[in-house]
Image (cartoon, rainbow, N blue to C red):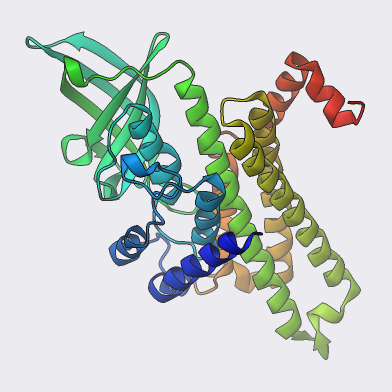
Length: 354
């Protein structure tokens, strides 16, 4: 990690530790929205890191944004960092719009367009499982209709929101909208925007999964060292050492795949075949690691790891939830196969023949 990224991680850690650490100690099932934490991150420029300066962001890169997303997962922070920066702000800047202050989330959904009063178009649709919609100011939608995509900014005050949750009990809401938009404000998005949205969402979830799993392994290692059983620490038992080594290996592989995807995106952009392949590998590997590490972490912790009073559930539930969001393991493994078949040079690179 570069010195700049290390400094950024330290800054994010300080903010999360001072304003968000209590979430790890709360025995409640559902995480509680944390306005002071969001405001502190926004004031530090950490909620729009990869968003261009001209659109109201910090003008940094994907590596910086990924670093903050990982740290948010390590603290089980109840805020939409990935959704705001990688998705909502990106859609707005792609359409030439400035990014408003306040928390934003995003969705990609089918929309219907129909003429309304003179000079306006009625835009309606339903977005499923939108992260943190009930707590955000607006949902920035990549609205697909036929072979077109349009930008739809849905103020949550004007939407119908049906609450839902993921496995970690984070909000995943159904958002219905029916808006009249001035024709000159109905922006058509470039071809391929919806596909890039899906890869961005996958990279965000890969970052969150890796962060959550690293938190789970750290807790598991600490528990094994401190917990005494049959007169000696759990970490002294060879079987336990083996389990923790397997978990650490899975997280290391997921971390390596994710870092490779971030590098590919920074070098070639999200719309490149190389980046598509790397993101698909990162998302699939993160999902695989989530299954393996979660099982091992709870096995080592025993019954206490399942209680509301223990921190472990914050990490394992999030890792499992994120592994199925933005496409599950099977979907991304299938995508890897499709990319290899469509692009022979990828097969040569994977097998070392190029």
